[in-house]
Length: 193
Image 1: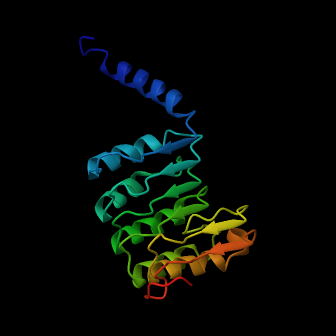
Image 2 (image 1 turned 180 degrees about the vertical axis):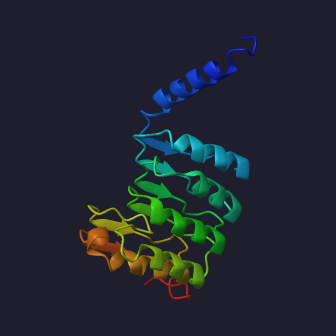
């Protein structure tokens, strides 16, 4: 193009993007390079176009507070994510605040796994308070799940707070008949029970 039709090309590209991204139901980012703030802002804008997206897995990709905040601040109510995994990153209090803010505006989120991060007790309690009146799992438990295995995951006391929240909600964990917590540090002591 010669630049004169810049707006028309931009609109055509947007429509093409919406059509392509609109059919995606699951995104798994395992193995990506550690994302930047700009990467996460761009991803958030793309996720808003994924009208059928149910699951977004960003587990263990090296997210930090700033990148998590960048992602969640760009998501709008157009994003229809039901399950978001942020587990196993380096998220702290600022990321917890961003997750809490997102849970307030998301109408579709049922699961936001934030286990195994760098959150302290204050961050965990902030998240629990944010979802106390919502059926949102903070540990990845699905409402129809009958077994949950958390053994050998290096869970620590802040994770216990998140887990207690999930277990206190019948709509989140009511189907569970088996819960494996062996070899965790949920009480601050490494043990087999």
